[in-house]
Length: 139
Image 1 (tube, helix red, strand yellow):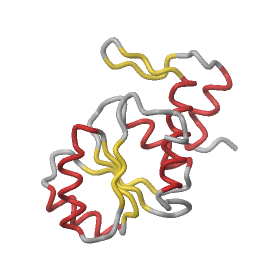
Image 2 (cartoon, helix red, strand yellow):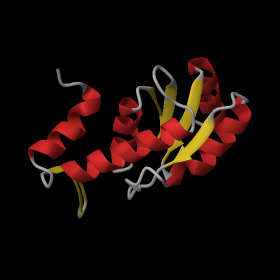
Image 3 (cartoon, helix red, strand yellow):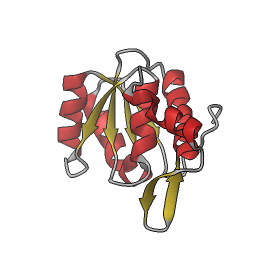
Image 4 (tube, rainbow, N blue to C red):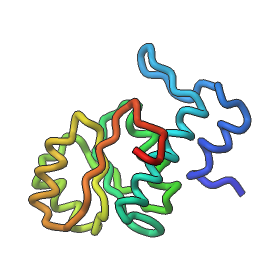
């Protein structure tokens, strides 16, 4: 049975160079999304996030979101998407309410994410992933 977490992997095995997402002039292929999601999953696991842990995601509507989303699912985590229009104090309240282990964000929201983490006092870790996220699990 195909799960939501396995969609990038399945697409990459059907047609690795198939375009899955386009934003302006940038195209994300099936294999690129699969590699990036695997890299995010490995980074989350190094941060101690795994089966059933919550990963809050503070990310704009860009190409950084899909690797964060699918990477968290691949690591067995529950994704808690956050609104980028929320002030840090609201993000902090949500982090506390969902007991997030990790707050993952794109570089654009890293500053607000760091403030929210400090305010939340949850001990959650910050994971910043760019649109050109490294697919290398060692980075």
